[in-house]
Image (cartoon, rainbow, N blue to C red; front, side, top):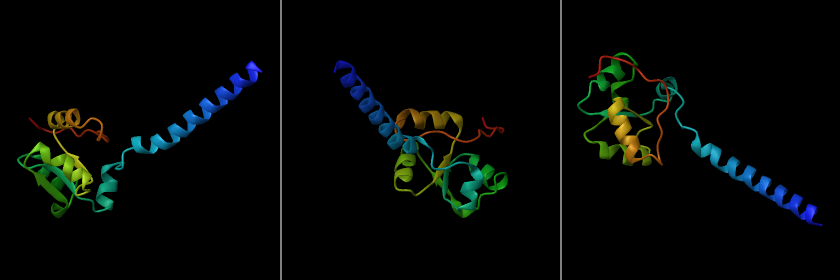
Length: 119
């Protein structure tokens, strides 16, 4: 009898673990896969207002100027994401690390890292 109860416990725990992983895996995947998908969907992207990144987005990555939104402070990024005003944001590595440190449970960094002159 003890063996059967142990087997029932193991099966129940396995089922619960599998169900929990199925429900959380989709939340861990980023919604934006790459830059080409942003361009093809005509999505709005953000960048810091006084940065060289806006020019880089227009001239190198070929984003339309109307699809780039400037932000004057780092506190505006998270509300813009949550309201779906922007689909992605392009930042310097230092600014991205600060933003992710403040919002580590809600956002993640994905995609390739572009190297240019920068600072």
